Length: 219
Ligand SMILES: O=C(O)c1ccccc1NCC(=O)[C@H](O)[C@H](O)COP(=O)(O)O
Image (tube, rainbow, N blue to C red; front, side, top):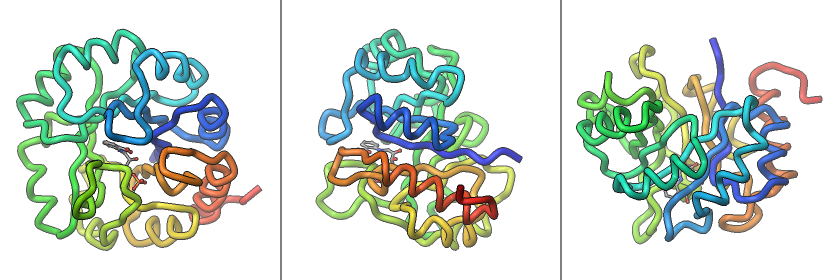
């Protein structure tokens, strides 16, 4: 079974290279003006070239309209769209049909009952991303560096394909993998030295911790 690792919120060639070299299966680009990780579609288009054939480029949007999605898809040709807002199942289906791309739908989680909410999106979204609920007052629906109780994932229907997200870092990824055994993981602020500033050494440390946790050599 494959195990996916997404490094999200990349903005520079150096950190994108570190993500790909470390073994990222997915690299994420944020299109949300209030985020310190926000990039222009053309910037993401230039960056993602280095990942072509090595990692899937994911465009992360929040309740984006067709005009904005058109601009993103045209400028960067993403491999996947991550919808991180309040997109309905109908909107997810519309986006999938319009672009012919797989869609990962994000949900925030704080209790087991939150997984019941995904039912209408099953069979519509290709994958889910389970993130923590944003802290009170945050303007960001994601990228807040906060975790939820990973034990909640242990009882999830194993046919649900998802990435575990929210507050992961090199120090806690071992516990997260042990408790949740997810098919994929996603990280952003845990590999940053400041909000929106990715750090190549932290990216390398994260991959090293993942390898150790998965029982592989740290070298
Ligand atoms: O990261 C952002 O700034 C962001 C802004 C708006 C919507 C989504 C955003 N991030 C989505 C992601 O996939 C993040 O990697 C995910 O929320 C985990 O972030 P973190 O807790 O910082 O690892």
